[in-house]
Length: 304
Image 1 (tube, rainbow, N blue to C red):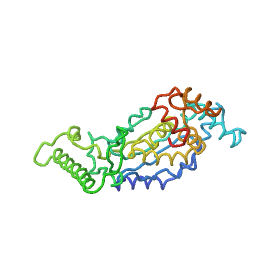
Image 2: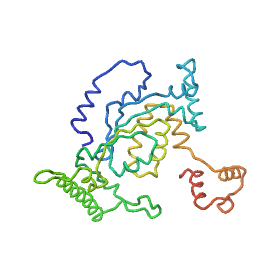
Image 3: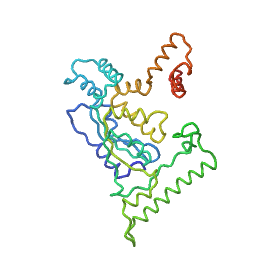
Image 4: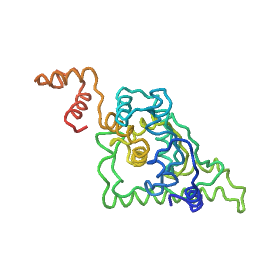
């Protein structure tokens, strides 16, 4: 189950309480507080707390107090200017704290983003639950033949059934041994900090993850991309939905300039100018390598 009964009870009690505040709040984000959104088979993402909104970004950029007399259009335009010109510090004025339940192998990708504060469930102190990520059949894929770190076509038939059986059986067997090793019935019992090494990478862990908006958007640009591994991408996509409600102007600019935009080298930009003048540019005359030219064509043709 994504949430234990105890966790759900605690969250429900917190959601039932309301308190007056003098701070600026984001109405879109307020609606997400104390709600866990399921991800994968046993995971979830929920907003624990946040600070700031679109107005906080523009206020920081203007280094002023209050909203003043600036119009909504000017606020949105300023945020787009900041995003377009890579001005990052105003976006750092907004922060969010998330409670995430995720498979360990996803956590190891996630923690590569070292610009956040993390506090993870301690398997030295506590006993991990018997919960494992088992891919849905459509996500059980073969190794890609063109990408050494990607997946290809979905496995089918007896092979798919056999792999799923191995994943389930191996995870359960490892957990059985874990429970047996730490048990103290008729034995001393192995220390939890040692017994955990026997657990598979698809077991679930949990953490609190606090990050500012600038670094969160960088995380989302990489992990919500179509080329990211599915199991971390679905978490990023759920967070994208939260961010869109939290800071709608900033997220719209992010979608436009980062997710939907493209960065061109000076050589690639020169090729665009030559094409606009009517010149037929090929890889051989472009000055680009075959790999860069292939990526450039993807951008120009809209297939990237």
